[in-house]
Image 1: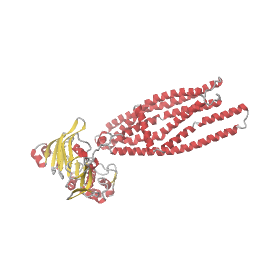
Image 2: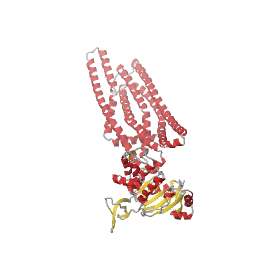
Image 3: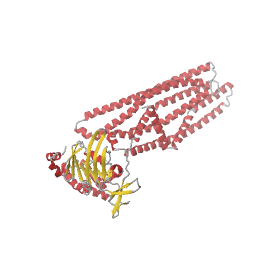
Image 4: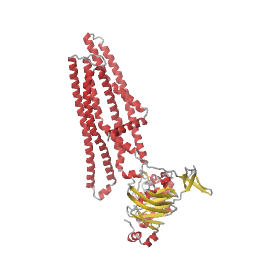
Amino acid sequence: MENRDIKGTVGRLLKTLFAFYPVMLPLTIACIVFNAIVSAFPSVFMQNIIAVVEQSWQSGDWNSVSGKILGLVAVLALFYLLSLAAGLIYNQLMAIITQGTLKKMREKMFNGMQRLPIKYFDTNNHGDIMSYYTNDIDTLRQMISQSLPQLLISCITIATVFCIMIYYCVWLTIVVVIGVIFMLFLIKKIGGGSAKYFFRQQSALGKTEGFIEEMMNGQKVVKVFCHEEESKADFDRLNEALFEESRKANRYANILGPILNNIGNVLYVLVAITGGLLLITNTPNLSLSGLAIGISIVVPFLNMTKQFAGSIGQVSHQVNAVVMGIAGTQRIFGLMDEQPEQDEGYVTLVNAYEDENGIHECSERTGTWAWKHPHQADGSVTYTKLTGDVRLFDVDFAYEEGKTVLHNISIYAKPGQKVAFVGATGAGKTTITNLLNRFYDIADGKIRYDGININKIKKSDLRHSLGIVLQDTNLFTGTVMDNIRYGKLDASDEECIKAAKLAGADDFITRLPQGYETMLTENGANLSQGQRQLISIARVAVADPPVMILDEATSSIDTRTEAIVQRGMDALMEGRTVFVIAHRLSTVKNSDVILVLDHGRIIERGNHQDLLAQKGQYYQLYTGAFELE
C-alpha cells in the first residue's frame, strides 16, 4: 500500500473516532497526555535532589537537606497520584471507546452489506466477507485499545524528555539526537519492509478462511468424491502462502526490537562517556537552564537517555499491530465504500380499494394492491391496479460486458397465467427471473409490469410483489414458525399454519419434536432437503404475492411428496401470474405457455399440446425422457 493510502486510512479512522465520541475521545487524549508528561518528571526531580545534595556537600550544611528532599518527594508523589487517576480514567474510557467503535463499525458494515447488489455476493468469497467481521475487526480492536494510546504516550514522552534535555544540556542532547536519527532510519527501513507483507497477510488470511468455509459447507461432496487429499493439498497451498506472508512481515518486525534495544544501550554508554569527558574538561554548558555541567546534570541525563531510547523502541514494538490494524481498517473501509444497489425507482406499492370512481389508496390491508405513480411533470398521482401482467420486450443481458447470455427475449405473461421455462442447464432460465427481480438490470430492451417500466418501480416494492421459491433453500436459525413467518413478519400463527397446510408441510411439521416451535439451526440441517423446500414454499404462501417465481421448487422432493405439494401449489398459484422453472417436464404440462430456451434464446413457445404437435426439441425431450438433464 502506498503512503498516501496509509495516511488516508489513518486520517479517516481518526475522523471516525472523533465523530463517534466527540467529547469522550478528547477527554481520553487529555488524560493520556497528562500521564505521559508526568512520566518524564522523575528525571527533573532526580536532578533537583542531586543538586540539593551536591550543594549541601559543598557548603557542609546538611541540616536542611532532608526537608528539601522530603518536599520534592512529596510533590513527586502527588504527581504520581494524579497520574494514577488519569491512567485509571483513560483506561476505562478507552475500553468504552474501543468496544463502542467496533460495535458501530460492525453495524455500518452489516447495514451497508444489506444494501449491496446480488452481484457483490456472486463475485466475492463468502469466507473472505466473514473475515471482515472477525480478523479485520480484531486488528482494529488491538490498534485502538493498545497501539494508538501507546504511540501517543511514547510520542508525548519523547517530546517532553527532549525539551528537558535541551533545557539541561545541548551537548549531551546532540549525542542522543544522532543516535535517534539512526534508530528512526532503521524503523523506516525495516518497518516499511514489513508493512507491505502485513497487508498481504490480511488478504491471504481472508482467502484461507474463505476456503475453510467452502470446505465445511461442501464436506459431504468432498467425502462422496474422495477428494480429501486434493482438499488438503489446496488448503496447504493457501496456508503456505499465508505462512510466507506472515513470516516475512514478522521477520522484519521482530528483528527491529532487539536492534533498537541494543542501539539504546550503546547510546547510553556514549552519553555516559560524553558526560564524563565534559566533566573532566570542564567544558562550559550550553543550555537554557544556565546550570554548569555537573553530576546533577549527567546522572539524570543518563536516565532520560534510557527513557528516550525506550520510547523510540516502544514505537517500533507497535509497528506490527499498527500496520495490521491499518490493513484491517483499509479492508473494513473498502467494504463500507462498496457501491450500494442503485435504485432510481419512484413508483411504490400501496394498499388500495376499488369502487365506481376508480382505485384509491388506503392504510389498512384490503387484499388489493396498486402501483402509486407520481408524475413529476404536473405533480399528479395515478394508481394502477396490481394484476401481475409481466412483459419482456427484446431483452438482451450480459453478466460481463461482451458476453451476452440472453438474446432478444420477449415474453408476455398475462394476469393469472402460468409460464414455464424449459431448457438445459445454462440456457438462461434463472437469469430471466433474476431480471424480473432486478437483481441485475438489462442491457437492452424493456420489461413492463402492469404496463409500468420496472426501472421506475422501487426495488423493494417490486420484490414485495413477487414471491420466489429458490432451488437452494435457505432457512434461518429460529423456530419453524419463525421461518415461515419470514415471508410476512406480521402474520399470525394461524396464517402460518394455513400456509404450511397449503404447501403440504403441515403433516411433517406436526410430527417434529416441538411441532412448529421446533428450533432449526445450520440451515435446517435436522430436516431433509425436501422438508426444507416445503418450508420455503410455505414461506412464500404466507406472503400471498400476486406474482410467483418457482425456480426448481420441487427439485428436492420425491415423487410421492411432489404429488402432495403439487396440489398445494396448484391452489397457491390460483389467480396468480406464475413463472416456473423445471427440469421435470411433468410439472409444466398444465402451463399456459411453455418457453424452450437454448443458449439464451427462445427457440420454441406454446402450450404442451402445441409443442408436442410441432415435434421439435420439446417433443424430443418429452418423448425421450421426462427428466431434462
